Amino acid sequence: MGKENIGLTLKVWRQKNEADKGHFETYKLSEVSTHASFLEMIDVLNEQLIVEGKDPVAFDHDCREGICGMCSMYINGRAHGPQSATTTCQLHMRHFNDGETITIEPWRAAPFPVIKDLTVDRSAFDQIMAAGGYVSVNTGNAPDGNAMPIPKEDADEAFNAAACIGCGACVAACKNASAMLFVSAKVSQYALLPQGQPERKERVLKMVAKMDELGFGNCTNTGACEAECPKGISITNIARLNREFLSASLTPGH
Image (tube, rainbow, N blue to C red; front, side, top):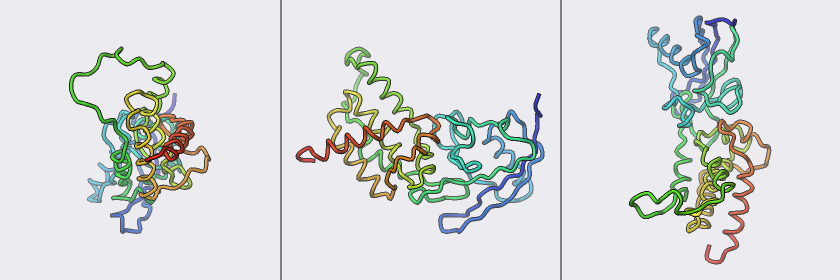
């Protein structure tokens, strides 16, 4: 059996605000449970810092169940850490060794400015969604589940695209800080379903225009986004986005 507790050296990025240059600070933790999650380990660090009268490390978190996409940070040079298809909150300390040094940084992308320490402003994603990532429907009772038949293959692909939690790992992992995987997932989930058809062409044009306006880079097909996505969103969605965009661009009146 492995150790129940391990000692760690943490190199954590500290930055007071967006204007601050920022720097790494080194901390020691002597008793970290291997059963703890990565965020629980940071909780332990912050408790130690507070006892010492120091400023705790600011980091994003909410559900801690791999759903909300808030726990965005680079761990030893990888978005969300060393485990594939895993958010930071689902990463456990048993995947690290006793005495190991762990480097923790915020996302590095111009459209995601640092608010403080490991917390970045990802509201750029909200702006992209507000530009067209929605379906306009009349309110009222929910329609019957069988009222609108959808081929299973389309339903499955739409569901897989909708699994995107908007964490921003794709942007952080991309050398160009491209948001194409995120935008393509949101465009795909609607383009594949009947409910998304009325605004299909307008949606893709507006979302891509907003993405470009906010300063996200271009996609050069390195595949880093797919490799680091904790939900395994496929880059085939980017191909669909390109087709949707071309079709909409060639349609008169758009």
